Image (cartoon, rainbow, N blue to C red; front, side, top):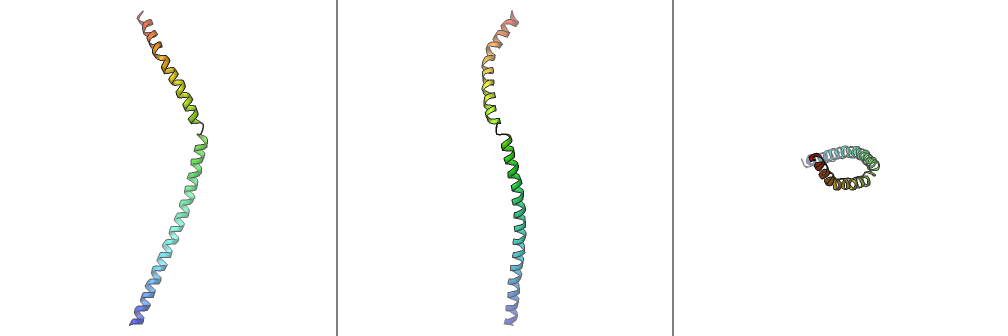
Length: 86
């Protein structure tokens, strides 16, 4: 009886090891796929960054020009109101 229990225990341990190895192999394959996809995403993000690197300074210049325009508008509105009333 003891020999049978030892054999069954060894078989169960082998089954657990085989199932664990199979799951680890599947996990390895999925992680490699994920690595490939993340590499493509990183390449795309770098391309977008390179293509848009000049936007920041241009936006700052545009905002400064728009602030100048906004500062010049109130006197023009007053003149237009006086001209329309006259």
